[in-house]
Amino acid sequence: MVTEISLNTICGHTTKIIATKEGKNTHIHIKTTCEKLRKWGTKFDMGTKDLMGGTDTVLARKSAENPLTPTCLVPAAVMNACWLENGMISKNLARGMGKMEIIFDKLE
Image (cartoon, rainbow, N blue to C red; front, top):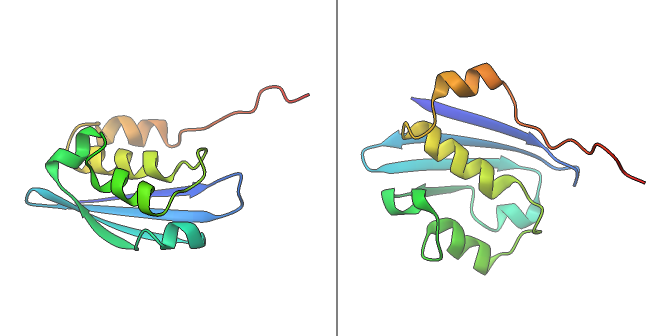
C-alpha cells in the first residue's frame, strides 16, 4: 500500500510525503521545494521504534542535524503517513476527513 500526503504551508513551500510499508520498515520519500527539508534527505526509512516518537528516532536525529522552523508541519505529516501505513490511524477515517487544517480564526 501507499500513503501520500501533500502540504501547502504558510512558508510558501509545497511538500509531498510518500510512505510505503515494507516488512518492519516504512520507506519515506519527500518531494519538496524547501531547501532546509532537502537537507534531511529525500528518501529514508522509519523503523518500528521510530513510530512512537522520542529523542532517539530518525525524525529526532534529522531535526537535530538540520533543524526546521518550529512551526513546520512536515515532521507531523511524516508521522501521520507512517501511522497510516502501519494501521495505527484508519485510512478510512483519513479518507473521510480529506484534509486537516490550521485555521487562523482571528489575527489582529
